[in-house]
Length: 411
Image (cartoon, rainbow, N blue to C red; front, side, top):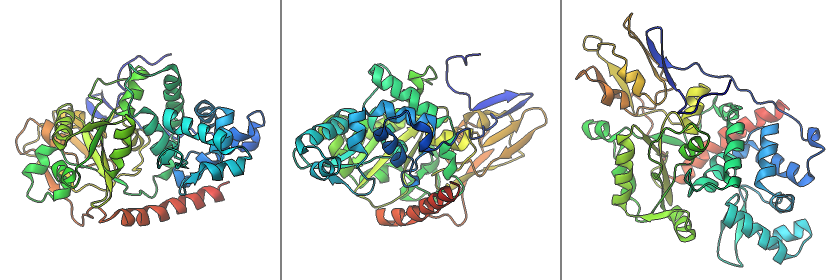
Protein backbone atom coordinates (compact mmCIF):
# COMPACT_ATOMS: atom_id res chain seq x y z
CA UNK A 1 0.00 0.00 0.00
CA UNK A 2 1.44 3.38 -1.02
CA UNK A 3 1.93 5.89 1.78
CA UNK A 4 -0.31 8.94 1.26
CA UNK A 5 1.33 12.21 0.35
CA UNK A 6 1.93 14.73 3.10
CA UNK A 7 4.48 15.43 5.85
CA UNK A 8 6.09 12.49 7.58
CA UNK A 9 4.52 11.82 10.97
CA UNK A 10 6.85 12.21 13.92
CA UNK A 11 4.11 12.58 16.57
CA UNK A 12 0.94 10.53 16.86
CA UNK A 13 -2.07 10.35 19.16
CA UNK A 14 -2.87 6.76 20.02
CA UNK A 15 -5.16 5.55 22.79
CA UNK A 16 -5.05 8.85 24.60
CA UNK A 17 -1.25 9.18 24.39
CA UNK A 18 0.52 11.98 22.52
CA UNK A 19 4.04 10.91 21.66
CA UNK A 20 6.56 9.93 19.02
CA UNK A 21 6.03 7.25 16.44
CA UNK A 22 7.97 4.06 17.13
CA UNK A 23 11.61 4.16 15.94
CA UNK A 24 12.67 2.01 13.02
CA UNK A 25 15.57 -0.45 12.93
CA UNK A 26 18.46 0.06 10.54
CA UNK A 27 17.81 -1.83 7.31
CA UNK A 28 21.07 -1.42 5.41
CA UNK A 29 22.14 -4.61 3.65
CA UNK A 30 25.93 -4.58 3.51
CA UNK A 31 27.47 -5.95 0.33
CA UNK A 32 30.99 -6.48 -0.97
CA UNK A 33 32.46 -4.71 -3.97
CA UNK A 34 32.94 -8.14 -5.52
CA UNK A 35 29.15 -8.45 -5.67
CA UNK A 36 29.09 -5.72 -8.32
CA UNK A 37 31.09 -7.35 -11.10
CA UNK A 38 28.52 -5.97 -13.53
CA UNK A 39 29.28 -2.38 -12.47
CA UNK A 40 32.09 -0.39 -14.09
CA UNK A 41 35.36 -0.51 -12.08
CA UNK A 42 35.42 3.30 -11.88
CA UNK A 43 32.01 3.38 -10.20
CA UNK A 44 33.07 0.65 -7.78
CA UNK A 45 36.19 2.65 -6.91
CA UNK A 46 34.16 5.78 -6.15
CA UNK A 47 31.68 3.79 -4.06
CA UNK A 48 34.57 2.37 -2.04
CA UNK A 49 35.92 5.84 -1.36
CA UNK A 50 32.52 7.28 -0.43
CA UNK A 51 31.90 4.39 1.98
CA UNK A 52 34.80 5.53 4.17
CA UNK A 53 33.85 6.26 7.81
CA UNK A 54 36.17 9.28 7.51
CA UNK A 55 33.45 10.76 5.31
CA UNK A 56 30.62 9.44 7.55
CA UNK A 57 29.92 7.20 4.60
CA UNK A 58 27.49 4.31 4.34
CA UNK A 59 28.76 0.77 3.90
CA UNK A 60 28.82 -0.60 0.38
CA UNK A 61 25.23 -1.45 -0.51
CA UNK A 62 22.82 -1.39 -3.44
CA UNK A 63 21.56 2.09 -2.55
CA UNK A 64 25.07 3.55 -2.48
CA UNK A 65 26.02 1.97 -5.80
CA UNK A 66 22.87 3.25 -7.47
CA UNK A 67 23.57 6.78 -6.22
CA UNK A 68 27.19 6.71 -7.43
CA UNK A 69 26.12 5.53 -10.89
CA UNK A 70 23.64 8.40 -11.10
CA UNK A 71 26.01 11.06 -9.77
CA UNK A 72 28.88 10.32 -12.10
CA UNK A 73 29.13 9.05 -15.64
CA UNK A 74 31.74 6.33 -16.07
CA UNK A 75 34.14 8.92 -17.49
CA UNK A 76 33.56 11.23 -14.52
CA UNK A 77 33.94 8.39 -12.02
CA UNK A 78 37.28 7.40 -13.58
CA UNK A 79 38.58 10.87 -12.69
CA UNK A 80 36.79 11.38 -9.36
CA UNK A 81 38.16 8.09 -7.96
CA UNK A 82 41.60 9.70 -7.70
CA UNK A 83 40.41 12.46 -5.34
CA UNK A 84 40.82 12.36 -1.57
CA UNK A 85 38.66 13.82 1.22
CA UNK A 86 41.34 15.53 3.29
CA UNK A 87 43.85 16.61 0.68
CA UNK A 88 42.98 18.56 -2.47
CA UNK A 89 44.59 17.73 -5.80
CA UNK A 90 45.28 19.64 -8.99
CA UNK A 91 44.02 18.59 -12.40
CA UNK A 92 47.62 17.74 -13.30
CA UNK A 93 47.93 15.30 -10.40
CA UNK A 94 44.66 13.61 -11.32
CA UNK A 95 45.61 13.49 -15.01
CA UNK A 96 48.86 11.71 -14.20
CA UNK A 97 47.02 9.14 -12.08
CA UNK A 98 44.42 8.50 -14.79
CA UNK A 99 46.83 8.65 -17.72
CA UNK A 100 44.96 11.36 -19.62
CA UNK A 101 45.74 14.90 -20.71
CA UNK A 102 45.43 17.74 -18.24
CA UNK A 103 42.97 19.54 -20.52
CA UNK A 104 40.61 16.58 -20.70
CA UNK A 105 40.74 15.90 -16.98
CA UNK A 106 40.33 19.55 -16.02
CA UNK A 107 37.21 19.84 -18.17
CA UNK A 108 35.70 16.78 -16.49
CA UNK A 109 36.57 17.97 -12.99
CA UNK A 110 35.14 21.43 -13.66
CA UNK A 111 31.91 19.92 -14.98
CA UNK A 112 31.48 17.81 -11.86
CA UNK A 113 32.56 20.60 -9.49
CA UNK A 114 30.86 23.64 -11.03
CA UNK A 115 27.74 22.24 -12.71
CA UNK A 116 26.85 19.22 -10.61
CA UNK A 117 28.61 20.51 -7.46
CA UNK A 118 29.33 16.87 -6.55
CA UNK A 119 32.98 17.47 -5.56
CA UNK A 120 34.64 20.28 -3.65
CA UNK A 121 37.02 22.79 -5.19
CA UNK A 122 39.01 25.93 -4.45
CA UNK A 123 41.09 28.40 -6.46
CA UNK A 124 40.56 30.15 -9.79
CA UNK A 125 40.50 29.08 -13.45
CA UNK A 126 43.51 27.01 -14.39
CA UNK A 127 44.67 26.77 -10.79
CA UNK A 128 41.79 24.94 -9.18
CA UNK A 129 42.26 22.15 -6.71
CA UNK A 130 39.66 19.46 -6.19
CA UNK A 131 38.54 17.40 -3.24
CA UNK A 132 36.22 14.45 -2.57
CA UNK A 133 33.09 15.23 -0.57
CA UNK A 134 31.12 12.87 1.61
CA UNK A 135 27.49 12.15 0.76
CA UNK A 136 25.98 13.69 3.93
CA UNK A 137 27.26 16.15 4.89
CA UNK A 138 28.74 17.15 1.56
CA UNK A 139 27.31 16.18 -1.81
CA UNK A 140 23.67 16.23 -0.70
CA UNK A 141 23.87 19.80 0.56
CA UNK A 142 25.99 21.18 -2.29
CA UNK A 143 23.85 19.72 -5.07
CA UNK A 144 20.56 21.03 -3.63
CA UNK A 145 21.48 24.25 -1.78
CA UNK A 146 20.29 26.50 -4.62
CA UNK A 147 17.32 24.38 -5.68
CA UNK A 148 13.64 24.64 -4.85
CA UNK A 149 11.08 21.88 -5.52
CA UNK A 150 10.00 23.82 -8.62
CA UNK A 151 13.51 24.23 -10.05
CA UNK A 152 14.57 20.59 -9.83
CA UNK A 153 15.58 19.00 -13.12
CA UNK A 154 14.88 15.35 -13.88
CA UNK A 155 18.49 14.60 -12.90
CA UNK A 156 17.97 16.37 -9.55
CA UNK A 157 14.72 14.53 -8.91
CA UNK A 158 16.37 11.19 -9.44
CA UNK A 159 19.22 12.32 -7.19
CA UNK A 160 16.68 13.18 -4.48
CA UNK A 161 15.05 9.75 -4.76
CA UNK A 162 18.36 7.91 -4.52
CA UNK A 163 19.66 9.92 -1.57
CA UNK A 164 16.43 9.35 0.33
CA UNK A 165 16.56 5.62 -0.44
CA UNK A 166 20.10 5.51 0.96
CA UNK A 167 19.09 7.51 4.04
CA UNK A 168 16.11 5.20 4.63
CA UNK A 169 18.51 2.31 5.25
CA UNK A 170 19.35 4.00 8.57
CA UNK A 171 23.09 3.99 7.96
CA UNK A 172 23.51 7.42 9.57
CA UNK A 173 22.59 5.89 12.92
CA UNK A 174 25.76 3.79 12.79
CA UNK A 175 27.75 6.73 14.17
CA UNK A 176 25.44 7.23 17.15
CA UNK A 177 27.26 5.24 19.89
CA UNK A 178 29.82 8.03 20.14
CA UNK A 179 28.25 11.40 19.28
CA UNK A 180 30.73 13.86 17.81
CA UNK A 181 29.06 17.05 19.15
CA UNK A 182 29.57 18.63 15.74
CA UNK A 183 26.39 20.73 15.76
CA UNK A 184 24.20 22.28 18.44
CA UNK A 185 20.65 23.57 18.33
CA UNK A 186 19.97 27.06 19.66
CA UNK A 187 17.09 27.68 22.05
CA UNK A 188 14.34 29.68 20.36
CA UNK A 189 14.62 33.44 20.79
CA UNK A 190 11.85 33.69 23.37
CA UNK A 191 13.69 31.22 25.62
CA UNK A 192 17.21 32.59 25.13
CA UNK A 193 16.21 36.22 25.61
CA UNK A 194 14.26 35.48 28.80
CA UNK A 195 16.77 33.19 30.49
CA UNK A 196 19.41 34.78 32.78
CA UNK A 197 21.79 31.84 32.28
CA UNK A 198 21.83 32.16 28.48
CA UNK A 199 25.31 32.60 27.03
CA UNK A 200 26.12 34.81 24.02
CA UNK A 201 26.53 31.60 22.03
CA UNK A 202 22.87 30.77 22.72
CA UNK A 203 21.73 33.81 20.73
CA UNK A 204 21.61 33.86 16.94
CA UNK A 205 22.46 37.57 17.00
CA UNK A 206 25.75 36.86 18.78
CA UNK A 207 26.64 34.12 16.32
CA UNK A 208 26.06 36.51 13.40
CA UNK A 209 28.03 39.38 14.96
CA UNK A 210 31.35 37.67 14.25
CA UNK A 211 30.83 37.82 10.47
CA UNK A 212 30.28 40.42 7.77
CA UNK A 213 29.54 38.19 4.77
CA UNK A 214 26.37 36.09 4.57
CA UNK A 215 24.82 33.86 1.95
CA UNK A 216 21.36 32.28 2.09
CA UNK A 217 20.46 29.03 0.36
CA UNK A 218 17.48 26.69 0.23
CA UNK A 219 16.77 23.95 2.75
CA UNK A 220 17.89 20.73 1.08
CA UNK A 221 15.89 18.49 3.42
CA UNK A 222 12.53 20.22 2.92
CA UNK A 223 13.20 20.49 -0.82
CA UNK A 224 13.81 16.73 -0.87
CA UNK A 225 10.66 15.85 1.03
CA UNK A 226 8.53 18.24 -1.04
CA UNK A 227 9.82 16.62 -4.23
CA UNK A 228 8.89 13.21 -2.82
CA UNK A 229 5.37 14.33 -1.90
CA UNK A 230 6.01 14.67 1.83
CA UNK A 231 6.59 18.42 2.10
CA UNK A 232 5.51 20.25 5.23
CA UNK A 233 5.11 23.65 3.56
CA UNK A 234 7.48 25.44 5.92
CA UNK A 235 9.91 28.11 4.64
CA UNK A 236 12.86 26.96 2.53
CA UNK A 237 15.12 30.01 2.19
CA UNK A 238 16.86 30.03 5.57
CA UNK A 239 19.99 27.88 5.27
CA UNK A 240 22.81 30.32 5.96
CA UNK A 241 26.55 30.27 5.32
CA UNK A 242 28.71 32.93 6.95
CA UNK A 243 32.19 34.42 6.70
CA UNK A 244 34.85 33.04 4.39
CA UNK A 245 32.79 29.96 3.67
CA UNK A 246 30.04 32.05 2.06
CA UNK A 247 32.21 33.88 -0.47
CA UNK A 248 32.55 31.08 -3.00
CA UNK A 249 28.83 30.29 -3.00
CA UNK A 250 27.90 33.95 -3.47
CA UNK A 251 30.45 34.36 -6.26
CA UNK A 252 29.26 31.23 -8.07
CA UNK A 253 25.57 32.07 -7.62
CA UNK A 254 24.38 29.13 -5.52
CA UNK A 255 24.03 31.34 -2.44
CA UNK A 256 22.13 34.62 -2.37
CA UNK A 257 24.13 37.44 -0.81
CA UNK A 258 22.41 38.73 2.31
CA UNK A 259 22.87 41.21 5.14
CA UNK A 260 22.93 40.34 8.82
CA UNK A 261 19.43 41.77 9.07
CA UNK A 262 18.24 39.59 6.18
CA UNK A 263 19.50 36.50 7.98
CA UNK A 264 17.85 37.46 11.26
CA UNK A 265 14.54 38.04 9.48
CA UNK A 266 14.79 34.65 7.79
CA UNK A 267 15.55 32.98 11.11
CA UNK A 268 12.69 34.75 12.87
CA UNK A 269 10.29 33.68 10.12
CA UNK A 270 11.58 30.13 10.52
CA UNK A 271 10.93 30.21 14.28
CA UNK A 272 7.42 31.51 13.68
CA UNK A 273 6.78 28.31 11.69
CA UNK A 274 8.11 26.07 14.46
CA UNK A 275 11.60 25.56 13.00
CA UNK A 276 14.73 25.34 15.14
CA UNK A 277 18.17 26.56 14.05
CA UNK A 278 21.44 24.74 14.49
CA UNK A 279 25.00 26.01 14.12
CA UNK A 280 28.35 24.29 14.13
CA UNK A 281 29.42 23.72 17.72
CA UNK A 282 32.38 26.13 17.65
CA UNK A 283 32.81 29.74 18.76
CA UNK A 284 35.72 30.74 16.54
CA UNK A 285 36.12 29.64 12.93
CA UNK A 286 36.64 31.30 9.54
CA UNK A 287 33.02 30.56 8.75
CA UNK A 288 29.79 29.19 10.17
CA UNK A 289 26.65 27.49 8.88
CA UNK A 290 23.12 27.49 10.23
CA UNK A 291 20.11 25.52 9.05
CA UNK A 292 16.56 25.94 10.35
CA UNK A 293 15.10 22.48 10.83
CA UNK A 294 11.79 20.69 11.19
CA UNK A 295 11.43 17.26 12.73
CA UNK A 296 9.55 15.82 9.74
CA UNK A 297 12.16 16.63 7.06
CA UNK A 298 15.58 17.33 8.61
CA UNK A 299 17.88 14.34 8.20
CA UNK A 300 19.84 15.14 11.36
CA UNK A 301 16.67 15.32 13.44
CA UNK A 302 15.18 12.27 11.74
CA UNK A 303 18.29 10.24 12.52
CA UNK A 304 17.71 11.00 16.19
CA UNK A 305 13.96 10.40 16.18
CA UNK A 306 13.24 7.80 13.49
CA UNK A 307 16.29 5.69 14.32
CA UNK A 308 16.57 6.71 17.99
CA UNK A 309 20.21 7.79 17.58
CA UNK A 310 21.90 10.89 19.08
CA UNK A 311 23.99 11.38 15.93
CA UNK A 312 26.11 14.56 15.71
CA UNK A 313 24.20 16.79 18.14
CA UNK A 314 25.83 18.28 21.23
CA UNK A 315 23.97 17.99 24.58
CA UNK A 316 21.74 21.05 25.09
CA UNK A 317 22.36 23.98 27.41
CA UNK A 318 18.72 24.04 28.57
CA UNK A 319 16.22 21.33 29.41
CA UNK A 320 12.52 21.68 30.23
CA UNK A 321 11.41 21.36 33.84
CA UNK A 322 7.76 20.51 34.49
CA UNK A 323 5.52 21.74 37.29
CA UNK A 324 3.08 18.90 37.97
CA UNK A 325 0.75 21.24 39.88
CA UNK A 326 0.30 23.55 36.90
CA UNK A 327 0.41 21.03 34.06
CA UNK A 328 -3.02 20.08 32.67
CA UNK A 329 -1.62 17.26 30.52
CA UNK A 330 -3.15 18.74 27.39
CA UNK A 331 -0.36 17.30 25.21
CA UNK A 332 0.45 20.51 23.34
CA UNK A 333 4.08 20.36 24.45
CA UNK A 334 4.48 16.84 23.02
CA UNK A 335 2.78 17.85 19.79
CA UNK A 336 5.19 20.80 19.37
CA UNK A 337 8.39 18.86 20.04
CA UNK A 338 10.33 18.38 16.77
CA UNK A 339 12.23 15.44 18.24
CA UNK A 340 9.44 13.42 19.79
CA UNK A 341 11.19 13.79 23.14
CA UNK A 342 7.93 14.07 25.12
CA UNK A 343 5.13 11.58 25.66
CA UNK A 344 1.97 12.76 27.41
CA UNK A 345 -0.85 10.53 28.64
CA UNK A 346 -4.01 12.59 28.21
CA UNK A 347 -6.22 10.23 30.22
CA UNK A 348 -3.93 8.88 32.91
CA UNK A 349 -2.02 12.22 33.22
CA UNK A 350 1.47 10.84 32.74
CA UNK A 351 4.59 12.36 31.23
CA UNK A 352 7.81 10.91 29.85
CA UNK A 353 10.78 13.01 28.81
CA UNK A 354 13.54 11.43 26.71
CA UNK A 355 16.78 13.20 27.58
CA UNK A 356 18.67 11.50 24.77
CA UNK A 357 16.35 13.05 22.19
CA UNK A 358 15.85 16.49 23.72
CA UNK A 359 17.78 19.28 21.95
CA UNK A 360 16.75 22.03 24.41
CA UNK A 361 15.03 24.18 21.79
CA UNK A 362 12.22 25.30 24.12
CA UNK A 363 9.36 24.84 21.64
CA UNK A 364 7.52 22.84 24.29
CA UNK A 365 7.63 25.80 26.70
CA UNK A 366 6.47 28.17 23.98
CA UNK A 367 3.55 25.88 23.08
CA UNK A 368 2.40 25.36 26.65
CA UNK A 369 -0.81 27.34 27.40
CA UNK A 370 -0.37 27.18 31.18
CA UNK A 371 1.98 29.89 32.55
CA UNK A 372 4.77 28.37 34.60
CA UNK A 373 3.96 24.75 33.77
CA UNK A 374 7.20 24.38 31.76
CA UNK A 375 10.38 26.29 32.53
CA UNK A 376 13.67 25.93 30.70
CA UNK A 377 16.55 25.39 33.14
CA UNK A 378 20.28 25.39 32.50
CA UNK A 379 21.79 21.93 32.67
CA UNK A 380 24.57 21.24 35.19
CA UNK A 381 28.04 20.55 33.81
CA UNK A 382 27.13 22.09 30.46
CA UNK A 383 30.02 22.06 28.02
CA UNK A 384 30.11 25.27 25.96
CA UNK A 385 31.01 25.26 22.25
CA UNK A 386 34.55 24.44 21.22
CA UNK A 387 36.72 27.53 21.21
CA UNK A 388 38.29 26.94 17.82
CA UNK A 389 37.87 25.02 14.60
CA UNK A 390 40.99 23.03 15.50
CA UNK A 391 39.46 21.97 18.84
CA UNK A 392 36.29 20.74 17.11
CA UNK A 393 38.28 18.72 14.58
CA UNK A 394 40.59 17.34 17.28
CA UNK A 395 37.54 16.07 19.18
CA UNK A 396 35.74 14.70 16.10
CA UNK A 397 38.57 12.82 14.37
CA UNK A 398 39.23 10.28 17.16
CA UNK A 399 35.53 9.44 17.32
CA UNK A 400 35.42 8.87 13.57
CA UNK A 401 38.62 6.82 13.65
CA UNK A 402 37.22 4.58 16.39
CA UNK A 403 34.13 4.04 14.28
CA UNK A 404 36.31 3.29 11.23
CA UNK A 405 38.25 0.70 13.23
CA UNK A 406 35.03 -0.93 14.42
CA UNK A 407 33.62 -1.11 10.90
CA UNK A 408 36.90 -2.54 9.57
CA UNK A 409 36.88 -5.29 12.18
CA UNK A 410 33.29 -6.12 11.31
CA UNK A 411 34.36 -6.69 7.75
